[in-house]
Image (cartoon, rainbow, N blue to C red; front, side):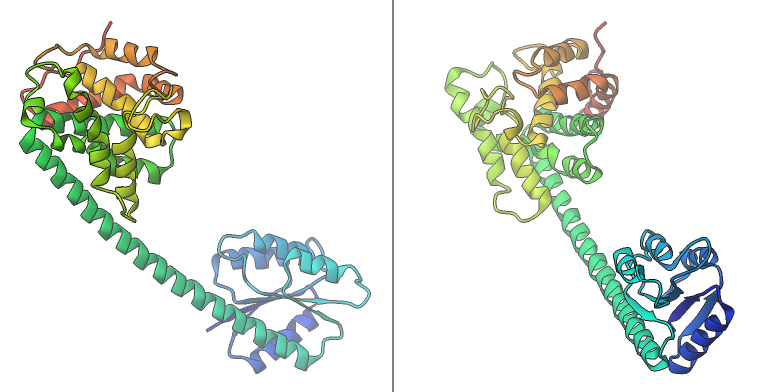
Length: 357
């Protein structure tokens, strides 16, 4: 059942309007002589229509309507205002203030009844539209959540494939994701973007699955002859996700393709410069370099977390985005702890990271 709120400081009019509404409709009627009391009631109760007098002490009908329009979930409640003929500015003020319809005194009962029925029907249609919209939004969220869960599963299976091929690389990819998320939080990225980065960042080096076994063995430092093969992994990884309409896959594609771009434009594969590099690529570039410098290779030892952080700082504005570097430095203690934990989780035995002093 719909609810009509009637507000008028003149009791005879209040009683008249309430009687007409009850006779002409099956609506519940709430009456108030105080607009302030009506506002407080409406704040906590569903309301389908407000009938209000223009001239009242303390708060006139237009001021009431403006306050109503600013209330959560009440902005679209229809308002029918009643005004005297001598209140000449009331029409202009009323419609500017958000009033839906206005009647002049003395009010014609038939016209009043027609307006009440029309506006109450409008409110009913509005509420039904809102309900349908909420249902559609809920279904869309459920679909997206299901799709996202499937994609997260696909990404984990790709990481598992990397784990079988080269466990050290898979371990580093997971650690880089964790570092990237901390950086993103310190950059105050939107919560949805941070969640997407968390879903997609770990896959950034998946293109390395195309490496030949000899290059994957890591027994010797890569040579100039390996350069083309190494550089091709960025595009190879991106192609795995190309053409997808999913936001997670699109993010994964951008990260794979751009995590070796440099802020000064000297990176690969496209030589992008500055903010032309997507923000996820700029973040993962710092995270990848930091974890890679600390990880030992058969042909070189890793360096301490402190020295790695210093190297990141020296490359600010050259290799790396200064804003990303600043967020990294601000959270370096947390990053070292999380990277150490991530590496221990996925590849025992692991060597803990020690901050440089």
